[in-house]
Length: 229
Length: 247
Ligand SMILES: Nc1ncnc2c1ncn2[C@@H]1O[C@H](COP(=O)(O)OP(=O)(O)OP(=O)(O)O)[C@@H](O)[C@H]1O
Ligand SMILES: [Mg+2]
Image 1: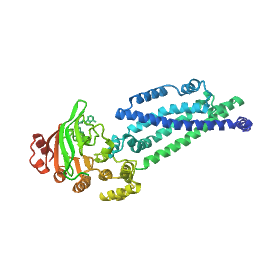
Image 2: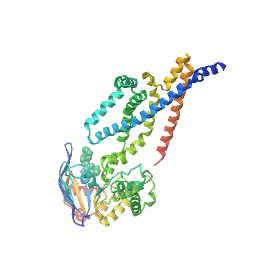
Image 3: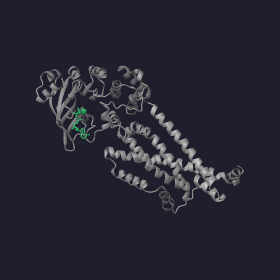
Image 4: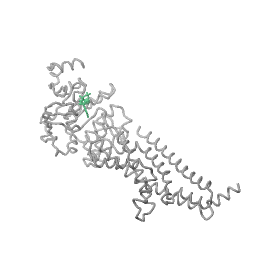
């Protein structure tokens, strides 16, 4: 027990080492949050372009571009994308690592969000589009007022799960020298020459966040299922 | 609004093909203001396609449709503005499930006719009262029976003050005991002078409420007549066969 106390002290209290975890957690949350926003914007845009093409045949070139984007992003490892963003795209600029990571994760998550949202749009009864159009709404208005709200509701749980995945994926940030939660734990390890305490602490923090988020998603799912029925 | 008896739709040589499948084959007819035109025919004969061509949910392959003297099949037509004047009721209602009944009725008037919310809601409540569903204003579509949904779908269209109402088998998806309540609403509408084009299998309704019945078979108008002669003295052999099967 004394031993445990001492190890706890050297790993977290001494020299304010817990600050590595706090700062790291802050960065992890910041990257995840910003990447989520970017991913949603990109994902919805791509999903709308793709399903508009599927439904009306309009926007061939845009659709083709979107398909290239989806293929490339989903066909290469996240870590490679992150490193390319850092050392190739911004190789010659002194860009903040936070921005680099946000862009890389946002662009990556956009591809997965796009396919989730697209499946949501395609799952809406075509009669909804027809009803909107025959009232006199244009295509865009019908999408905005009638199709998207329903599609969004249908895919909200899947989207939320995608972001739980994203939260965990950001742990590779350390490879471009970003101080995220994982890296914070790793730095403590390199100072104290002890792996157990810092890494288990990191794991527990991730686990707690994921459990809380999953619980919220579950609540949300039940909410959506019971309302309007 | 056009006066009663004026020509609303002038349809000339309307053809529609899906790929190599010619579904409408040179359809020509007129629809006048105040008419209640009932369209009957075997399954797959092109009734829905014809009806849906009238508000350009299907784009004709060739031929022309004019509405109040305007060629709506022109590229220049403002489709959205045109469709505001044409109400459409579907077999499967197509209410907006994420909106309350009141919101279903007020969405288009607020966004498209630029009505204030109060004005649109006041009118919507009036329409709901007209079909006996005032107390459902705050409910969601999923909480309604089929017959109630269809009555809501009808008044949702009416909220746009259409000049014509199109109905595509409005009672076909309903349990038998709910057919009557929907037909009653349609009958009232006809009595009020609404121009209506109705695809239906309800021959009793066609006979009593219709002012003209059209028989479409294999994409062709094989016969059209006033209901009495249509049902009592059918001329076309295919129509005779059709009527003998269903009555
Ligand atoms: N979007 C479409 N694409 C391809 N073929 C179609 C399409 N819509 C209709 N058809 C075909 O056109 C023909 C006529 O269809 P339509 O729906 O107009 O018939 P209907 O008279 O309304 O039949 P029902 O009584 O079964 O509703 C059918 O052979 C149908 O398969
Ligand atoms: Mg049909």
